[in-house]
Image (cartoon, rainbow, N blue to C red; front, side, top):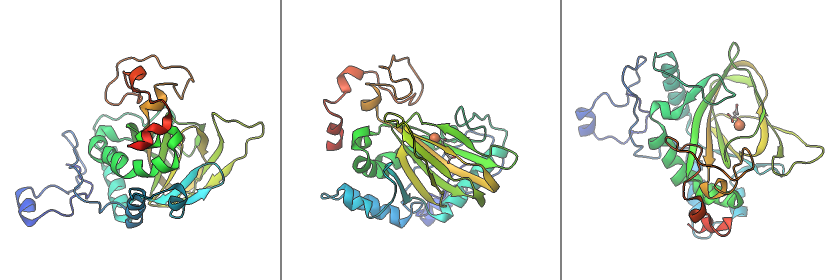
Length: 291
Ligand SMILES: O=C(O)CCC(=O)C(=O)O
Ligand SMILES: [Fe+2]
């Protein structure tokens, strides 16, 4: 059973009742599951401090920016997210899954290597609470105009780059209002991200900036910020990517085709649109920051 060390607070009685929880096995034969995280111990203390600030009554953008690193005027921010111990355990579990004979899909149409988190049961119990409880107070301040306060679904996956596999990722924008990209390790050289224009606001001479990955830390950026990844020169690079969507925004205009979406039924979160598109759209986007 997959359990990403989220149960550090188990009592002796619980351990006696279910000693196998928390173990790491290399051959999974049954559907993988996670336990609901019972503590915040997998999150970096500095990240918890940021969340605590953002949920305080007087929180404001300038106050939040004191805790993060900002990159140019492109609204890209770096912040601590996970502990090192968690990142190591997470990658170890992903490697076990990779080596298993479980059926696997590709993370997206561009990356050939990596893991879709819903395939290992980590969507509902791990990414949903991470988005709702921890990330949303932060994105509400950073991206109110993009529905940062009402990001209500996601697509989450881990991408992997290695010398005889994918080396880089070409320029693209994400199917997301806001993206979180956390560096999980392992050891690698090069492989930085580069960012150009915001898709909805192109300039005749786009300027590009390069942003390095820092282990355990995350980058938040607008999904529409054009970006790509430079080739790694050695080692292996694993990153958690969470494409976060706000139905209140995309119900009005699909961010991929710039048209009013025509909805078809989908499984799970689909692409993050909701059916009652007409009814749910707030008068102004900032309404959702009143949550
Ligand atoms: O390789 C990376 O760190 C970026 C991946 C990415 O941009 C994506 O999957 O959308
Ligand atoms: Fe991307």
